[in-house]
Image (cartoon, rainbow over all chains, first blue to last red; front, side):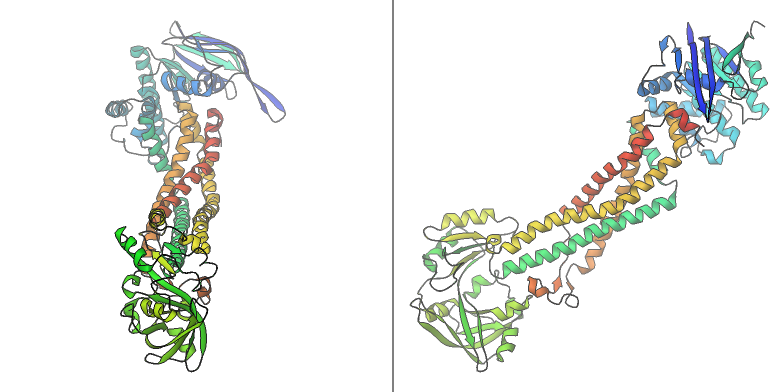
Length: 230
Length: 409
């Protein structure tokens, strides 16, 4: 079954006098358990596509379906519910809520979901250990490095085991060792829990972990390579 | 429950994110609430004092008169039921604080001056709780009994008449046959009153002595009843109305002195207006603080929306933040007002700034009256209006598009 289906997506932004086509008739299907990297130069449309898949941005035309359910016509509240229950996000920057500690940031989504406190706490501590941040539970974002913050954000995205994780440049602020560790964690979740990953990246090392590499240029998909087969 | 805990945690921590701004706003709210409650206590005290002075200036809570007495308070309009009979009815009805009086216009003459005033023929035993005169502070002595042959006059009147304790004065009034009734009395005491005009306009003599002088037998001008609370006199009014019959009139204190009654009503309205006006001044600061707080947090609001928090919860978060700020300010302001009232609750002398207060029936000593109902009113109004004031910034925050908010520079 398809985890994500995009059909003929178009999105145009107005920048000054110019219209910029961020998505130009993009169609893509990502299977459940897929591990896909979207690669494109800046302005190529990868983040716009990621946002459209996550229900954060509405395409001008076309359809987006998550697990067979069309989402581009849902209300704000319905989209919020979808994101809360089914999608984990890792953004490129400004990922954490500054007034919450690392553990509280990780618990945030689970708390909104209504997960009981004891379970929340246990899962948060476990995932912090998994991303190599044991002992930093009570630190606030301002007291952590960029890499540590990014790992907390990743932990938050995966802690509630969403069916789909969307990551925009997740390794942008990480050193190579930590980036490798994170990608291995992603692959492990992908393989053991069948979590679908869609990652927008410039990073060739990240691309090397992907089962499928989709290259974009000027809002269009120009290449779609099944790396597992290769 | 989970969501509520998240909202409270976020609201509370965001509140202290910018300590200085929050503390400044808290100081403004505290000061505003203090002003609301403290000034209300002073004004309440002033009005209560006016009413209390007014009531102790003889109306009591309920009075019985001849129907024409209020238009013409003369000897011609005495209560048609005898004092003995009506007194018996009042005693049987279980009234504790009540008195009967002869109250007529008279002229007092010393060897130097004459003055028109109101002569009160009273029984000192029943009058004690009903009069504005504190018997214990009377210079000389107060009346001993209903047939005491002395008179007690105000200190100010004594000065005007150039008389003193032990001297004789002559009282003149009319008897029921329109003849002059007069008699010489010895001044046995000088009283002081909070309101100076009382010292000039009233004098006390024994009721039986006055009845004898005026040749009115066992008749009196008025019956007065004092209840427990001047704000609620309906029970007394009903009870007294059932005791009397025939050609008499029963009136509540605010009917006898409509000015005082109106003052009390106006005061309640004024307290509300005063609280709202102060809040309006505060609300500019509050709204500005919230708008700034929301503006600074656009990206994290976008993040929370992106992670699945519903817009309504963002709205609640901002409102909770506003209400927390107000609640702390209210608690501090209310406490400060209470603390401010304590040292002056036994009265402050405002005679230095209150020249002429007498003219309005106010005493020169002000007793602040901190009512729980006023504190509750201030708190409820501030919370309710604060809720309304925070709706706009909260609504704006909840309408952000997550992706636009996250990418906002």
